[in-house]
Length: 175
Image (tube, rainbow, N blue to C red; front, side, top):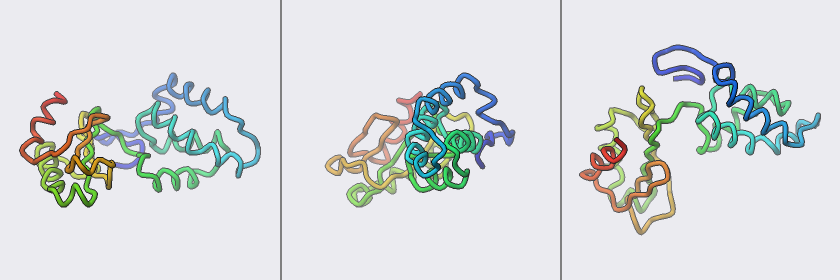
């Protein structure tokens, strides 16, 4: 699924579809000290992208272009930052963002089996979102809770010492 595409194949522009959210982002960026100096404006890019992702939930091409235009930057500069930092996403995320830690401690203690069970039960691959946008599944390298390994996060909720047998219960808690 590319930027700005719906799961059913429709194309849309979040900037045009959600004028109230666009105004919120516009007001945020307008409050910054943006000027004609592109190098200086780059200093506002990550902060603007954080706000944009907070407002829209993800950063499709239309939102990236809006930020680029407001900061007088090239779209490629904006996309470069989005593709570099794993925090940013150009794909829609689900209401329940499930992240399975696959760092060393979690991996050694069975994180791969946990991830595989999530994939099986949600019928998703790593990095995908269900068509109804209820669940997103991702692996990440470390959440810094190695004593709880393997660790799963659902939004801001941390689950420790997770086994594959616990996955169905975690999913059901979201329903």
